[in-house]
Image 1 (spheres, rainbow, N blue to C red):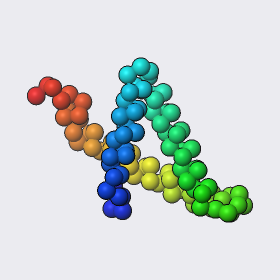
Image 2 (cartoon, rainbow, N blue to C red):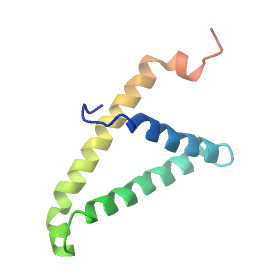
Image 3 (cartoon, rainbow, N blue to C red):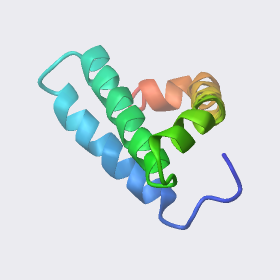
Image 4 (spheres, helix red, strand yellow):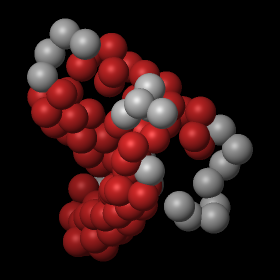
Length: 97
């Protein structure tokens, strides 16, 4: 994970995961994951928009912003996939000890 995360980073992330888990109790996990990913994309598009004075400025920065967010997501997904691979039994079968 990036070294520049603030002290509440994981607390906020956990609150989003908790909400996703609530939804996953009543609907397909894949659907919940898709909604979560869409909401993240929508929010980050808004975050990006707040940094520009015009749509022309935003359009010019679009490729770089997309590359930034895609790279950050890729790094976070790799980190979490590796964590699940390396801790599979602890994460997925915690009561089998």
